[in-house]
Length: 572
Ligand SMILES: O=C(O)CCC(=O)C(=O)O
Ligand SMILES: [Fe+2]
Image (cartoon, rainbow, N blue to C red; front, top):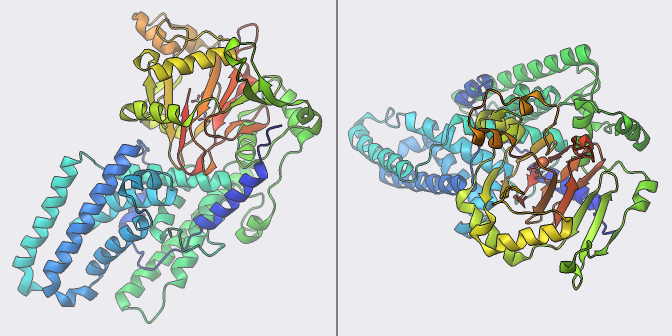
């Protein structure tokens, strides 16, 4: 066997737990954020692409430079240095350095930020919440003697930033914050991240209480009530610890108010949790703890080991012709967290060996083929794309990356609907646009025995797919169901192009290349087969979506586990 060491990855996840630890800091009261979280029912749309992250960092750096310039110019307003507004500006500047100072190369900043869920959330929160708040401040109201002169300086700073925003054609909005908070809540939920239990390492970024408020409210919106209670409670503890009576009275008042608000939120989340538990019973799904908080404390419940279905229970589930969505989701979660559901007998039949795949192409250099499942067949071809090919393909695709769409029959979701199902960026690459793509298709044909040609419609064009931290794809099948009314009933459609488009994405088989190693998370998980495939640079995973009678093989249900740390580059 080519050993895929799941336990090693488990360790990786543990390390990331430490990394995620929240040491929420002082200076956190933010009424605006609270309003925002109360509006948490707002629908969520787009997330930032790599290119947008890069422009957002540029904008943030410009804002920081302008603010520094302002503080120097306004140094005559010395007494204002202790003013809460000036402190807020100083904190904005400091936080920029906290986030970016460990990345030396500015060219690497966008990737490093997109690969880090904390940094991405902070970046969008800064641009969509903190900066507009600074803009609304009347910085001179404590110093009327300098008001006019300093006003004009401040207006100059504002207009430089607005100009920069225009040049960068970038608008980071509250919706982006909600989207990133939502991804973060899913990460906590999926990987059972234990917030606030360990001290953060010196290299980690510390989430602030205001970030925790955003994440907690996203968890509430997604009905991850246990997670929401946990996040709010952790934030409450940090806020309490950073409130003391020696503070300036107004600061003390604000912090005490914040603690009260967090207590209300904890109460709200725990009540919703207990109510749902009494109505639906314990399902292991969606941020639920097994006992009501009114009886067993959050701390005690977090210390309990999560029950994992036994392999025999899993096999029983699998034998049923259709697993319920709930079972799929529960198993998907377990597999994302590194569990497999194969018995020793099943494992012993799986091989990892060099194979020509019956093709002359591979006679001299057979492919290394690892089996994950025999029926349905699920295999990984190792080392099938070289570093150079990967570089060529990614640089071809990057300029065309767009938010991924989601299609099912005649339902084509817009970006708002798609986001909850799939959050990644894709670019289509036609094989005749570059020899590297043609070669890759030849390789796929040799490995799979399938005929590929996107010009003749034998196959789809290749699709480059990029997930940042938090990016995922919920469980789905890659073939449409032949009995699906929405798919078959095309009477209402006049345009033959629309019929073809409706059927786009209906795949006989799937070959998916992993273009890099992902730091943590990002497995492709198959809840009905009981295994997850770990992305490894240069390998490709392959399975067939149809049974011999042409119907969809629902056992191939699969999804992309959220990326916990890093960026996942894939292609299919
Ligand atoms: O990225 C992955 O691991 C899965 C992607 C996938 O299933 C798809 O795009 O259809
Ligand atoms: Fe898929």
